Image 1 (cartoon, rainbow, N blue to C red):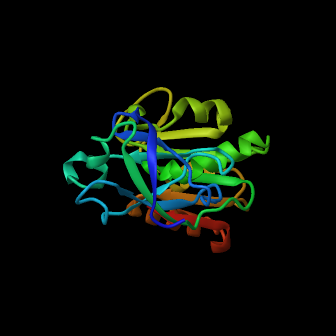
Image 2: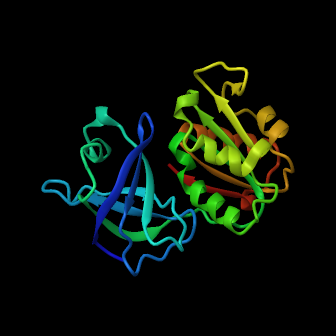
Length: 223
């Protein structure tokens, strides 16, 4: 799949700054849950401005779906996406991605870094294989939590939230610490799946190293 134009069939806000975009699916679009593609906007001046976005749909779905955090202040691709509507076209490119499900574990995400995990959890859910997988999800405020209700329904008490800029009785407040991972992570022999902003990734990797989690058990995607 290279430079395939696809029409947008649905576009809406999942949160105040995250868009959900659903498009047609090219016949040759074969991906694994957790993988991504490079997307271009099919408009003059934007066809060479590609950005990587993760598939949030299942490989078996008859459409492509993405959850994309927008940054209007950057006046770049994600800001331009805000002006698109049903019937407009995107161009999708080759498929890539380092995150792939290898077995039960702890998924640690920061903000839009959760996107590779959406398809993985949906895939496990359809196969009744969610097991003891947990999601530790760091956000600024409650309104930033992407697909909160869906994750809550799928994972129940294994959906663990922490907020850095809002205090609430419902969720923890602060940053993901070594103690937080020990308290909520379960077995340190599990796989740890990481995706989020670089400062968060660096901090969590240091915490896991201090907890003696083997590096081959850490599966990560830079965000």
